[in-house]
Length: 219
Image (tube, rainbow, N blue to C red; front, side, top):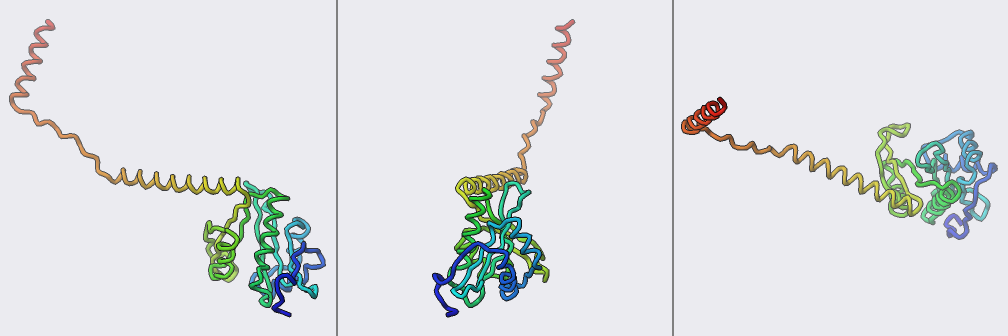
């Protein structure tokens, strides 16, 4: 039954009574662990953004822990933690949990995008975020994790207007970089100095004669 199809697993909103099982799921799956008060903080602050995957025996086999960055501009959500027990992986549960939380961020909180961190070594999660869920890498945060490993900082825009803004920002950044390169290229190009005219004795004599004529005419 551990290999039961995804249809046997229910995705539902988390309740306070689920928090202990969510914590246990986290301990089984991830090296980043949290105290119970952190789960309580999330469910009391953003109850719309915590979801669990529950199997036919009412056992929690996966969860997503998410929040809103309330003081950010533009307003956006953040995925704090995502986990699915090894026995229930490759059933699309992580994708369903993520999309459900993201949908609530957009509809309830009008979030422009959602962000997350992922270990550089976690290629499976990186593939899920980029290939399945449409996240893009925006930065690398050095030694983000407690053990010193770097993290990819990633974003996924949640609506068309945000997507248009992302494309405009990306184009603007590329145009700025192109402009800087062109400016640098122009700075590196040596400017040609105009050729200086070499005066002959005849030119000097003519200039003296002209000056004397102007002086005599002014008297």
